[in-house]
Image (cartoon, rainbow, N blue to C red; front, side):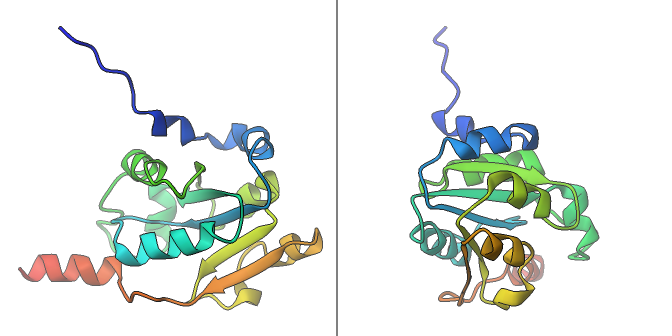
Length: 163
């Protein structure tokens, strides 16, 4: 019986305790973004590609399942467990490293990765982005990328439920 190797993209999955070391090995400037990324859609991948274009490498930090639930997105959210969301995110060519956080904010991962560029979607004012003061403090930039493709995981789930 033929055996198959694990996909190369799984090497991009980085436990939080290894983030500082692995992020330090990435090309700079380093971009950092975070989110639930529960059901990946066109809005997500457009945003991620635009974010990645702001630097030479990108780290994405995902909310753990418990962290997603605390955001109040619904009792059944996330639809996809963290392990699956990490694999899907790692498979994207624009993502160089993917990690996670269980806290209510990604500030610990931001401090560990020390990105030069911090990015969130257009629904976040730059001054409200967690880690903005820290990244600016070490000379970095903070971006809020306007939504080019209006999509929503919550709206998508609602549409599926009505079908």
